Image (cartoon, rainbow, N blue to C red; front, top):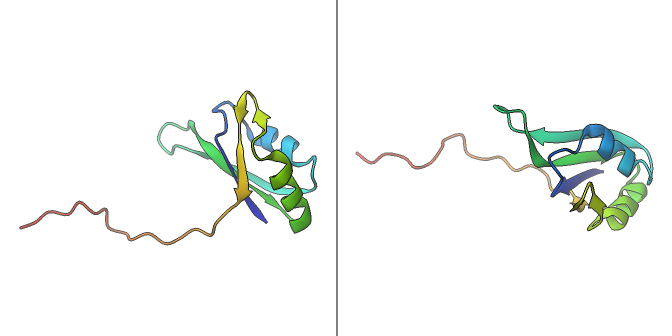
Length: 93
């Protein structure tokens, strides 16, 4: 199951998330999202857990808890939706 983790402190690392979630079971992967230009964390990421019951336990056990001084948001990740390729704000001629 893919899990969304939000409101992360900017100092959080992949290792921090892996350690936190591994208390509930096997962590398949961790992905912190960072700005592609500056490389700074955007304050959210995703944790993949192989076992759904362990993932549910992690969601229930970690949502609203403190990680490095910030209360994190933890829930099941929603599938990514396709966005239009154009940027909007078009010009009128």
